[in-house]
Length: 485
View (cartoon, rainbow, N blue to C red):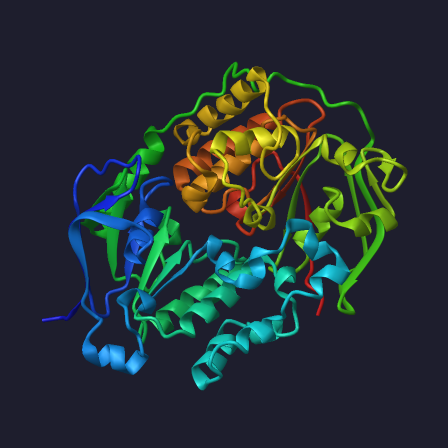
């Protein structure tokens, strides 16, 4: 009989405001690689947090059967939870160095020098052949000289995986393992997980069928806090049916009232832009012109500089004031304030997402988009609050309006931030991986909303993604950033 690793028996978690339709029963046996599949808000992250001890148990029991006397002696572990690791979008905050960082810091050369390098971070874990193999296998060794704050979201994800595995966990949970990775890196990580499965027990949390890793041997379906062991074929039929039956109508929706953007010739004009960090070139003689009303896709590998390029547009990077850069027909650095620049722009990115750490309600986070602040520090008028709530209804997340932004799943956070980006109906919409972590139904809905936004006269868009199938059909211009060696 295959030994059991973890067993949940009639478990009801103790979580304020959450009612579970039935107790949770789930048995994980040795060498099983489980994938928990379900839509945004289904309870995948909650289940993982329950396993790692973030939530208490009201009734029932969780037995960590791997934690034998021999295991404790071998690992010097005194508690089973010490042997569990979770890698998620928010895992960066487990690094003490990250907690005191702020979003614009990465663009200030003097300040980012004070953050540790990847090599310095790795020096804090045991130096052994396994860690060296992990770094080589995930190409983290190529990042040794890079400062933590300068890592792209994909590079940071690879580092977090190495740091988690270096602890030799009995079980590791990957929440959205492929989020933020370019095509080639996704393939390499998928192959790595298959290789790793020979020596490591894993659980994957994914919102869509096309995100299930090859290493998966068993599937647990999550839906509205209900969990059921299923065969892959049955979950395919179930999720496809849900996608087909979810229809969204945007006809006569008041948020899309065909607002005409103020006329201009150039929304963006970059001439001979060159930027280096630590004496390594990121851009070299880059030129890019965007005329009003154009819809662009910005593509490129992890670490090619997409986020840095967008930071110049959004006035988050002070280097923009010394470059030949024109926004909305105005040369940067001619007396405009940072708020003048941001006012007509709506912007979402994974890097920005990381710095939303204000313990505020989701409705307040959406409302902050009207003032271009990370968190809301002024009172919305009743009309502004109603507008924010309308956007949450459109994205089907109005049930989150009073919930803390910090206590919802990563996919739900992404939807809240998309509502924040769209709430002021900006003249320039910059969407950097806007569909990160979303299930297929929400991806479809968000694409429809983006397409509808683009029908308004004079609206301009820059869309960034590593998945070409997610690019809206209205995009007809492409700009690719090549990674400089």
